[in-house]
Image 1: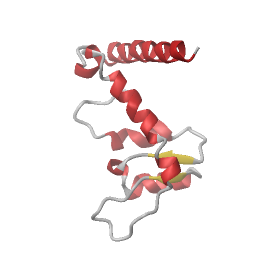
Image 2: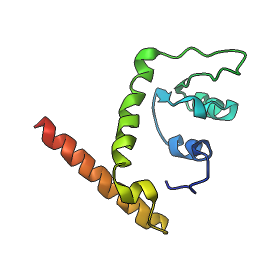
Image 3: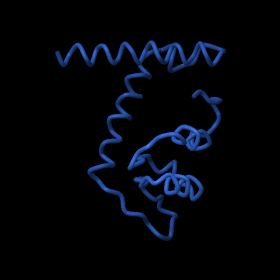
Length: 116
């Protein structure tokens, strides 16, 4: 799913996880929203999203599960090494998504090659 560059990721988050069957949803503090947390609870999953400092009631987060978020962060860091993806040269969303898919395939092949 591709959104506008100026749109916050939280706007697209509910539609991205709508059909998922999972027990845990891990995200950073930017996804701390009562509506999004309620959506996660309604889907039967547990949210592992740290509370920002301005929240009066701080949620506890499993450090073991929250550390797994690092894998996704490293993937996006690798993805941003592809100039076409990082700067979004493509005007059409389908062309940009194709660039992301090609870059992701190269990352996966490189990872797969190093493990064999």
